[in-house]
Image (cartoon, rainbow, N blue to C red; front, top):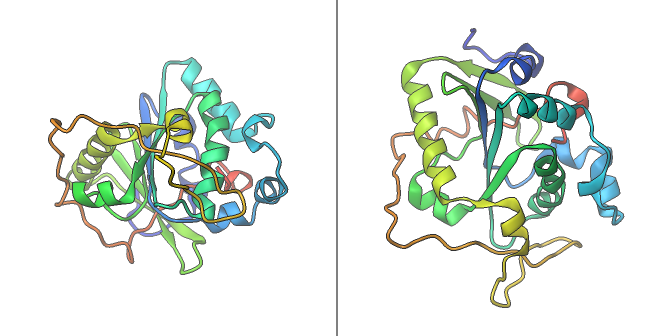
Length: 228
């Protein structure tokens, strides 16, 4: 596939055509596609967006997972959560119900692990799709690579992140010892499930951290699904 930046629609079909697993590393503190979506306005007004009817993204997740395929994400989170991260935590519960396995990892821990500071989708451990953003968190396009070295680094980042991340449901309800996560009007108590101190941290320091060149925010399947 082409290595120059192309519209997301050029790879939208991969979310239906992948054979085994699609993985997402999500690193930004907020996304314009979320803030500009009708779902954001409903969430700000107090709606329970986790229980809304399925949209096209969730319908596809259900269809693909019914065939035994996997949708996986790790979201890096700050302490306290940004408003954008609060939104994704609430919205993500609905995606989990549809069949995604979404997990959360503190940014400080991601830094210690040497994870990249840009977003990407990884399809079947063979193709990496990185989205390019402007300074306002708006997706400009996607860069796709099947280069074995870059794919291998993405796989290393996935494995390290997945090993240390906390499932969304557990993250949302875990005790915080009195601390409050969340900087917006919907501040909530969240937390981090513990990990065994005996587990060695996996280093991915070799993964490029060129966030100015390759930032990724996936827009699911069509422009109508950018808030996923």
